View 1 (cartoon, one colour):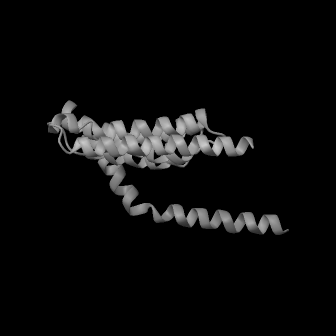
View 2 (cartoon, one colour; view 1 turned 120 degrees about the vertical axis):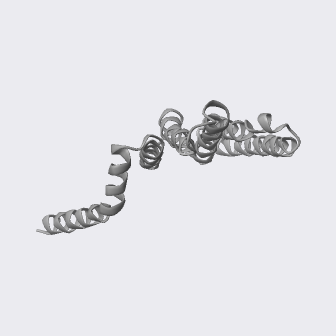
View 3 (cartoon, one colour; view 1 turned 60 degrees about the vertical axis):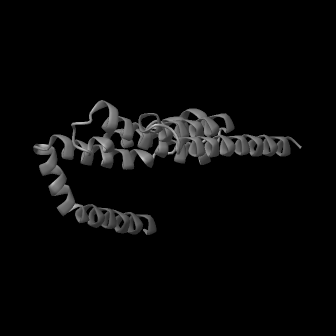
Length: 165
């Protein structure tokens, strides 16, 4: 019976969030451009709130992603309009970090994989924004990444051979 009550609460919460999202997207079509820039951030925060209240990672993942997109848009459009658009990736990477932090704090299982996506975006964004040695590192990484596959493959084969003896 308790699981049924929990399921009903999640359905009510989910329905309410979908209604709010629909209203945001509908009204967002008629808002002045500057105000409309905040819609992705609001949508992301709404999804994050849903995931936190429900204590479920399902809405947290898209919430983190959309929040990151919203942060990236605001960085490019409002804070650094003269900067390279790669600055967007720096904001977007924060959204992926939010997924790990929110899942660790509010759900039963911490999702670490978004930190890989965040690190890649952070490195690419920083390299494209500031160049120099970061761009050289990015170029080398772009050429040598297959070595990581080879090393992982060797590790798996050695681990298998050790485990079967």
